[in-house]
Image (cartoon, rainbow, N blue to C red; front, side, top):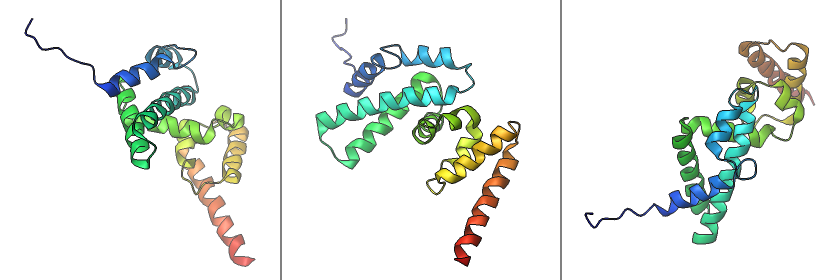
Length: 168
């Protein structure tokens, strides 16, 4: 032995601990993501699992280092990167799944009818619940809408709102 011992990085150890407690009831995140990958709404289930890990790691960092915006941002960034590495997905994909779950996770209609592509179009903060409901209804009417068609509907709805706001 050369006398050198490798100590696990404190953050990695905390992330590993957070992963041990995540979906469902302690199941390994990577195994969980692999099993649900074939599901039609994989991105939503993955987003839920990712957010659970991020929130737990963020809470551990806040407890350890104090509650500041910088600590929270660094914790979230570290957790996203760690999950991207272990899940062999890009960090952007990990964040996309988490953002989709944050915005659409409490709307059963959105989960059932919107595609990941639709959700990406509807993620900006400027998109309100009325526009989301309109796209959900359009998807219910025609589940085979192409992305360009959904973009057109979004543009038309926004243009219509500008016209009605200007005339009142």
